[in-house]
Image (cartoon, rainbow, N blue to C red; front, side, top):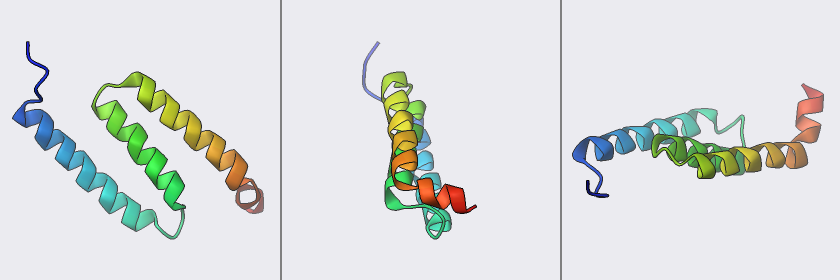
Length: 76
């Protein structure tokens, strides 16, 4: 079996990228660029079945939210 992605994989990845770009634009007023970037990395890793990268991205997102958005969460 080859490591070369198939056309179906490429189309799935393109659809995922489009979805995240659209969602990032919609969520822009509610989330920071770092949150969006980490979430996109986690979702792309999940689509590519890279569990290690996904876990690291999710952990980084949680750490970022605790560190940089603690006051915002308390105000809600």
